[in-house]
Image 1 (cartoon, one colour):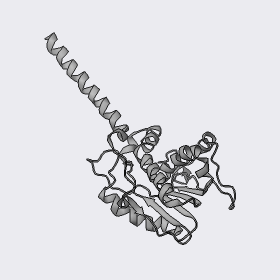
Image 2 (image 1 turned 180 degrees about the vertical axis):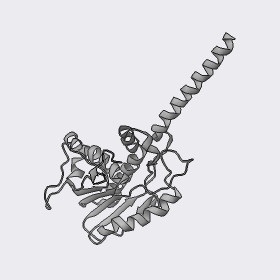
Image 3 (image 1 turned 120 degrees about the vertical axis):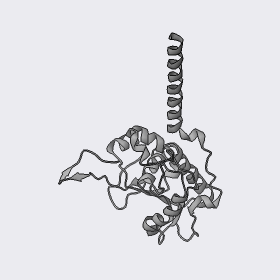
Image 4 (image 1 turned 30 degrees about the vertical axis):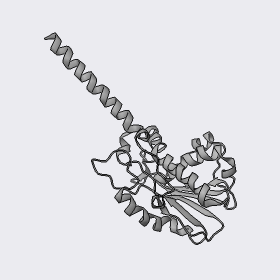
Length: 234
């Protein structure tokens, strides 16, 4: 009887161990994904004909419709993202086309609803993995092959703005020469807190219409019954 008890105890321990490993792999999914090749034009939502003296680098919001079988991140060729992202681009980024060359990569995205089971800190780590590294690879390719040292604007919405948080805090801190050419960043639809700017002292929030190298956005509070709610998705 004791042998059987120890056997089942060992089996349970192994199952739990594999579960924890699977969970860790789920949260560190960059280890299981290859980098996206941005030399392939099909991996770009928009590569414009250069007509202007300034560029926009744009990241769309969450644009895929996950199924119950999907994991935490989609594939670069996800059909729903490929279908929806151009529609959202027309709604959002097309406003820049009269004054700038707008470049927009496809990038793999976090399953926004599935990630809600994680803490905000864990959600940030997940966005900083595959979504940010796709955006970073695309931005580096854009700078090397398309930008030609022109000044540029960063623009995004929702998950795209969350990804831009890391491009601003990490990449721009390490590349002040590139940052010096940034006119402004418009990361809308995601919270940029005072603590974020206190931690990233190379960044500053816009104070006037002629400021450059600044972040332009706003934070909102959710209201219920005419009162501020304690719960806010972002």
